[in-house]
Length: 377
Image 1 (cartoon, rainbow, N blue to C red):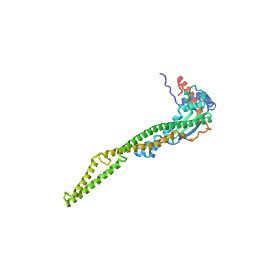
Image 2 (cartoon, one colour; image 1 turned 60 degrees about the vertical axis):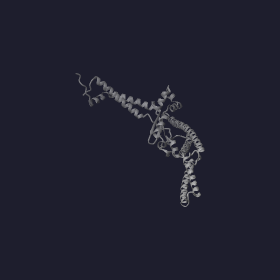
Image 3 (tube, rainbow, N blue to C red; image 1 turned 180 degrees about the vertical axis):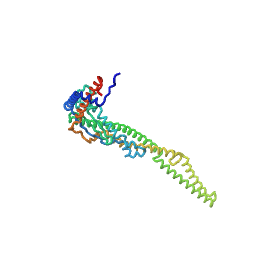
Image 4 (cartoon, helix red, strand yellow; image 1 turned 45 degrees about the horizontal axis):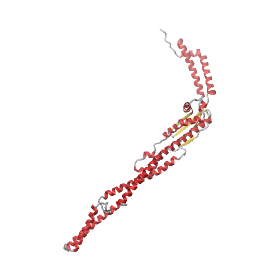
């Protein structure tokens, strides 16, 4: 049976001692090549960065206007008033805009990336720009985003970062305007519908008042008061009749007159109670339904008017937002012209190549010895 090979520290040291010249030569050559690559062939890249944040936290225009008009008292509009946007969502949107194909292709064309890097297809140039040129970092706590670009020319790196920030603000303004336009169209449609409903409610109330009076509720109050007064007068006249009967006989004209007076009052009272309101506004029969319908019509007019009063400032605000082109982002730190390269890290390259060459060459001699004969034990 073949004897099993056993290795220890001495065997490894002996292997290095026997081949150290070759290992050192390979390592030295690799170090020289890495120095040439790092210092003379690989272009240094400069990084120019700028820091931006949203101009203001996005709040719901609808919620703010509802609270200002007092309509929020009708229900819970807390979610609407607080808005659904937050800094994390804004930063995510900013990153999407910067990395969008439209913005990236614009930068590629403006700064001749295709010609400089010898790309044949725009697809490859876009991929290269996203992966190797632009760099984005976000601070969700502070609500800020850092936008940077790499380039061998520090001035060009600054110009590219400026361009990306400009396009970010421009595109964000366009999105806000488009959103405001959609809101305005929706509110405009609602405004027109409410005006129609208000006109219809006002016409219905007018027709009802033409038929039953300007204020049926006040007329019924007066009729009810009159009915109570007639009832009191009847009681009073009956008391007088009792007094007359005690001092006069039934055939006396005073008693007959008093009886006729009481009968007349009762007839008026019965007519007010039993006759329909539609025939005479002083009658009480059917008056609750008339008053109820009147209140409903008047309430509908008040509701539609309240909605219209609320929608008008919302419509005006949406028109303002649609035509507003103020900056939507704040530049906290403007892009600079870097005076120190960001990469490559030359010492890391040299050290990496050197150590890699040393271990590869040592592993080569180790494997060569391992498969030919065992090391000394």
